[in-house]
Image (tube, rainbow, N blue to C red; front, side, top):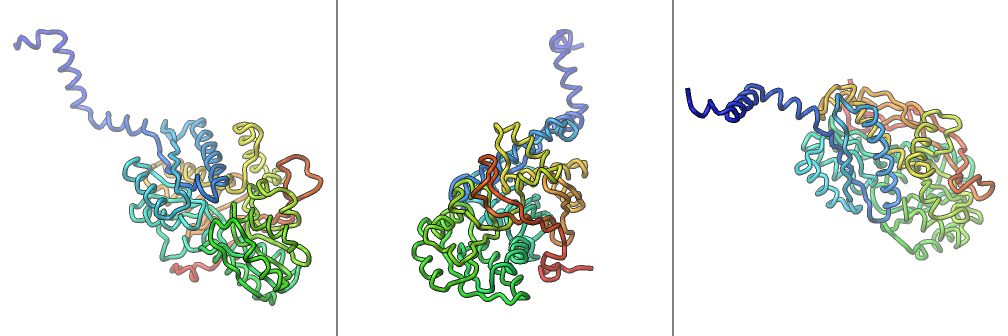
Length: 412
C-alpha cells in the first residue's frame, strides 16, 4: 500500500476527486439549473426617445422581478441586461452582438425605435437567438427580414394608423397634411393612413418630412398653414412629437385644423403639458386609465405603483413588461431555455398581460391586439396622470393587419 494513501487527508482528496470524475454530468446539470436566464434589453437610453426607453426598463425589471418571485423556471431566475443603443442602428447591432457573444444572453427583447430594431433583428436572426421587438414596425414582420426567431410584441404602423384613420378621418374633413419624421416609423405611418383613407376619399395635400431629432419646426409650419388642411397628422415620436405639438399650437395651426397623431404618447403628453396637446387625438397601445374596465390593466398598474412610488406605466413601458412576460411564459410552456423551443412555444401563446387578449399571428409572429383611441385632456384632470380620455378601443382583429401573402409569407 502506498504511504500516501495512509495519510487521511490524502485519502479524502482522492475520494473527492473520484466522486467528481465519476459524476461530471450531475455537476453540469446542477450548474445549468442554477444559471440565470439572461435577457438582453437594448434600448435608446440616450437620445430623443430616452424617456420612453427608461420607462420600458422599469416595466421590464418589474416583469423579471415578478417572475423570479414566483419561482422562475425550475430554480432558474431571470436576469435583465440593459444596454444603450443611443438611437443608432450601428450601436444597436454592436451592443446586441456583445450581449450574445460576450454576455451569452438566451434571448433579446427591446429596441423601441424602428431605426434600430432591424439591425438588432439582423444580428439575432443570424445567430438564431429569439428577439421580441417592442417598437412599431411594418418591415420586421415581412418575409425578407423575418425568421422563426423574430417576434413583434408592439403594434405596427399599418394597424395603428389604420385604427386612428378609421376613427378620425370621417369626423374632421378630407384634406390631410402629414408632418413626418424622415425614417421608417414616419414613412410607414403615412402609408398606413393613406391606405385606410383611400376608401374614404381622403386627399393628401403634402407629406412634409423633417429629420429625426428636430428641435425647431418653424421652417415647416408656414407651408402647412398655407395649405389649409382639415387634418394635420404628426407622424413622429418622443421628443419630436412634443416639440412639433407645442410649436404647431403656438403657431395657431389648431384654428381650422384638427391635429392627430398615430401614437399619442403618455410620456410626450406629460412632457408637453395640457395646453400644447389640447384637443389632439391619436392611437396608443395602452393607457393606464383602462384599469376601470380591464382587470389585467389594474393588476399591472397596481404592481407598477407599488414598485415605483405611485407612478403609472406608460404605453411603451407596458410593452417592455409584456415583451419580457411573453418570453418568460414561453420558457415555462416549452420547459426549455433554448431559442428554438421557446420560439415554438411563444408562437402558440395566448395571453393577457395588461390590455386584454393577445396572440401572435402564426405566419409572421405579429402580436394581434387592440388599439386604443385617446384624446388629450386639458380640463377636469383628477391628478397629474389623468391626461387622456379613452374615446374608443378597436378590438384585436387579424383582419386589420396586412395579409400574410402581402408580407411575403407562403401560406398553406
